[in-house]
Image (cartoon, rainbow, N blue to C red; front, side, top):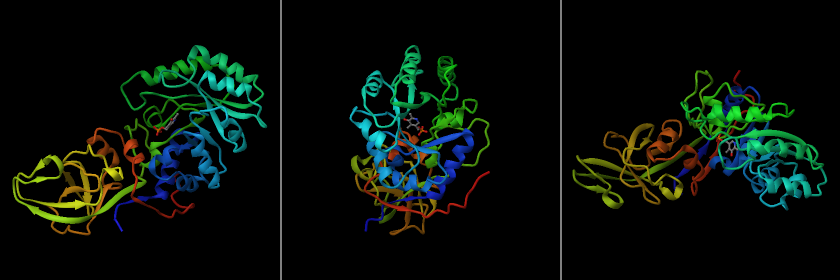
Amino acid sequence: MRPARALINLQALRHNYRVARQLCADKALAVVKADAYGHGAVHCALALHDIADGFAVACLDEALELREAGVTLPILLLEGFFDPDELQLIVAHDLWCVIHADWQLEALERAALLRPLTVWLKMDSGMHRVGFFPREYQAAWQRLQVCSNVATVVLMSHFSQADELHSARTQEQYQIFTDVVTGMQAPISLCNSPALLAWPSIRSDWSRPGIILYGSQPVAMHGVSVEKLQPVMTLQSKIISVRELSAGEPVGYGAQYVSEQPVRVGIVAMGYADGYPRHAPTGTPVAVDGRMTQILGRVSMDMLAVDLTGLKQAGVGSSVELWGAIVSVDEVATRAGTISYELLCNVKRVRYEYSAYDSLKNTIA
Ligand SMILES: *Cc1c(COP(=O)(O)O)cnc(C)c1O
């Protein structure tokens, strides 16, 4: 069998959720959209079920997959419904629903629902993607107050630059939001992962951590001391071929790398069809048998080359970590000109293996 695998450490996932929970000091919806950022939403949600306050996903299909797997905790639809027809299923499966646009509000008012819903009313405080403008928000809130299809309202917004420590934008958005919601008696939800890490003064009743649950750290922590995040996914494969090349020999498509000295090259069963980024250049770190080295030349669809020159023991069958506990996915993403989110979401074709976890272990204070 092809040795490309994604090992998913569910104990690390639980640890990271607890770190997120400690950072926000209140309730946290574990964001498991996009198949839990490529980690497997059902496995991840079940592994968090006894410690999470709830989950967040991007759409009804993702929520139904979790319900069918036995997830009974609250599940929030981050973009609400895309078609008013979905409202009946949202009620039937007891889902929480973001309302971010006028057309959704109208559909909600018109619907005949068996039970009233928990609605998260989204404000566009500056991201300018979805949500009601600050000047429209009060009116939307009033309409929800008198709508018989609404049981509970949570006030929410989303930051666009929380990962930029020197930008004033997050504080500005926070101020805009706070000015509008003052006096509204409802819980508030603001922080994604970068906001939890970088803006400890901004707290809300419900946080929405995503990427930190998977052990990637998109931004430095700001003077807060918390347990370190643990990488959840190890993307690994094996060396399937080794060749010694003299100086001046090209490796891979387009001769993007040409040896300057004699090199020992290992070929790994991992390529961009597995989700490893084709834009990762020569020099991107990789670990062979636990030791750091680098990739050489262009990544192909099913294979890539690594430098074994300094690794005398390594050979066919040696284990290769593309990212995980030794090679940070954040570092690979930076080299490839992208972010960890995209790399993790894009993993495919490889075999997934899930570690067991102990629900009593790994409790952090
Ligand atoms: C995806 C998403 C999150 C999680 O973001 P991270 O940066 O992964 O923590 C939070 N809130 C909303 C609205 C999202 O769409």
